[in-house]
Length: 152
View 1 (spheres, rainbow, N blue to C red):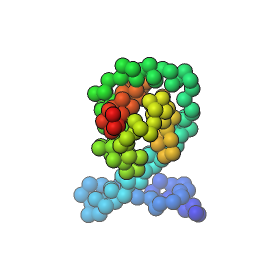
View 2: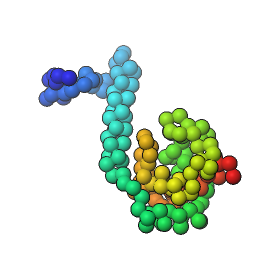
View 3: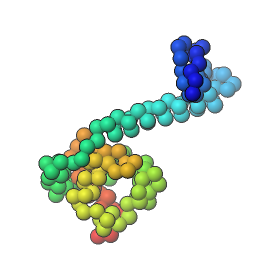
View 4: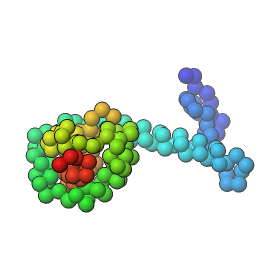
């Protein structure tokens, strides 16, 4: 791509043409505002996902032991809230999948320890939640997923 001078913001820019946020009442403001919002959110999402990937690391033995201990007294109602806030966008509100894997039978595919590790470190396109969610929240969401979408 070649850079061009941006007449609105000045300097060089790459990629999408500049779309200044239109003033309200302008005839084309709806479409221009939608394009601006989509581009802004897409950039923010890519930035957050990139930063999350930079901080990911394998769960240490100490991490897993802490998570397993938290799992023993996990609050499933907290897990439901965490799932709705952090997981349902990709895994679907009913756990049927979409961007993320379907969660049906998760208790047959993963041991508790492996399930905690996947949520802590991420896997594939799933971002890591270690350091983002607390140990109690990770344990709770795993307990919720296993009790809601598992076969037990």
